[in-house]
Length: 491
Image 1 (cartoon, helix red, strand yellow):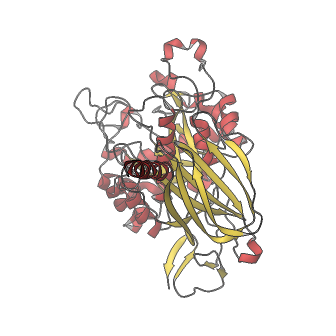
Image 2: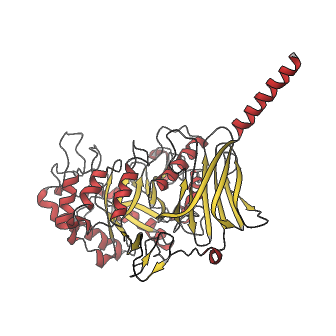
Image 3: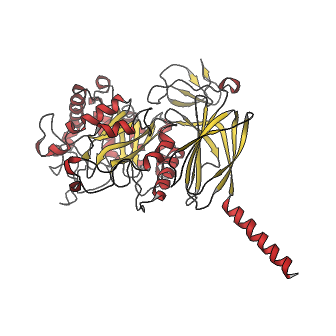
């Protein structure tokens, strides 16, 4: 009898071990479409705002033929008064970015530029500094509101004349964060007043440029409301940008994306780095989780912080004085391949609704799904120390595919998926601490799935048709939600 009890106990613990090793999660992907994905990128910066001018790094990170596939590059608009008047800002001047911008544009990248501060003479503290060190808050003088966009036009002209045109300009980096380095403070109302009264001074048509607001520290929805809820300012804003410091993507950014979508505006996550990392593969998992949650929050783009340095794509994070001749040290970091799970596959894709969709705080397994042409893409991040089994249910039968998997021992391992007959249900075992992307192929003709034509940067094509959420085109609006010229319309 004791022997039987012993055997039963062993079986019980074995079953518990198996269940713990292969926790089962049901993932249902629907045909309902969410936001379009414009892309992924990083700032051409390293070490305290130093411009990154190495075209070789751009060539590795950017373009469809690169192993990473980035397509967005961020740069600073340094606070110089005019082209040629570099003054004390020589090190962070506009000209230092020309090699990187030219290389990125040659790779088809979208370049957007952000001022950390306007020129000091336009500010209340007379300096490009945010003013924290002197306890005098650096703000744009009210009598200089009319000059800000004129100054930006000078920057745009300089870049265009040097064959490095910029696609997007932002109003201000972190207008809600008082700093002792380069910075400028705006309240939501002040930013609204600036745009509403003087947004027409930005020569958008001449330079073929779009305007981004407001790049707040943690995607504060108050800025989004101030800029978009009044037609006087809304007419000039094309994109809502913001950061997620101290604020999970599924909090503030999700709220701003919901507001922006009502006005047909894109929402971008434009700066963040993983804080408090341990320097191991765990950091890359947290990074993948953050990118994934940004997509779930409704972001159209995710732009990381430094290209070179701690928690970035290249180099080893050493201090600047340890880099002779401005060289960057060690080659590319594992984060490149963590990003590739998104940037190599999702540019131009449309996110699909999944059930359950929003992961709970502390959840160690999450996912998102997308459609792009005749591809159905599922990204899964397993942060758990044990393996996980996903019971995947797709909205259409798929006939072939590939998987791309990254663990601490193997980065971005590619495998063919063998499917003997078209099917829509799969049980997938995911290794512990892994990032896995599945790219399935389906018969778009048989399913009737047609991806609507978009422009090169992922925006809705500008035409006069009405589109339902399943991508079907109509001459006139139909009952339900229609998308017309990038805006959702209820009919």
